[in-house]
Length: 372
Image 1: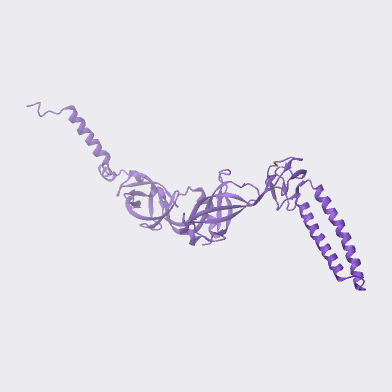
Image 2 (image 1 turned 60 degrees about the horizontal axis):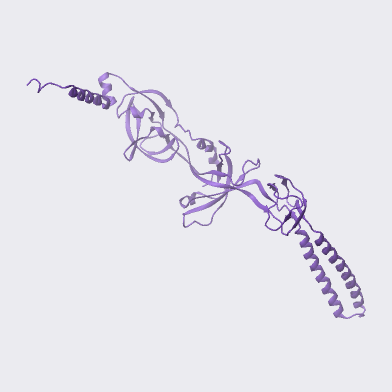
């Protein structure tokens, strides 16, 4: 009988484990009451109304303001190359010349014939004044002069096509052909880009259409220049919505005087829709519970669990629509160690919500330039 009621080592282990679990799960407030005035160290902040930018981010590809492949219009041998790799040229600069001996000879021949025809026309007109010639002869000579004039224009056009000129000012790319090479239409001698202004096209959802308009300021970033923001402006909002994606295109222009950006670069574009003046808190202060969000307010040195309604969110910061008011103190660090009613020992208090989002910090002054 004594063996039936004895405790085995297994039962002792189970009882010890149960006691440990009970101790671990006892709320801090109960432990505090049992141990006297023990409190949990936390860091708090004072809830304030701050400027909260509402922004959109999208990806776009950089394009030159003007871009063209330099190609010949005729097939022949290159006799003049008047540029080097990467050279900056002005509009109208002669870049290359094709063999044009035949065209020059043809033009010279037409000019000689035209000069003779004009002299004959002048003589016939003088004879016509004294009725010494027929009107038919005068008409035939005038027609000959007009035909030769038209032929001269065609010959001049053929000669001009042998000259390859820069259509606009910009920066040339790499030269692909050498002097003396035979080229034909479609061969790319080089490229020409106007890089003083960079265009960036991107698309956003149709639900943002009312808050976007021409003249708004945008910011662009490239992995090639970490931490550098390029400022641009919306120049055009597409007049159509893509029915397959329910999005619309936006074109922006970015000043590129220093030639840092290049066509083809992938850019992250940030569009600031508007700036709200609203309650914001550090995102770390939120305590999710199922589908609800809570914070711990500090009242008389104790934690008071309070439900809040959140609005827009950004990395590190969140908008509060209801539940707390300006000037109240909430816990931002140490929320996992406290419960409703826990005694608190405040290590430090922040006067504004922390915001480690770099792009948000750099965009704060932009609110003065944004419309809509």
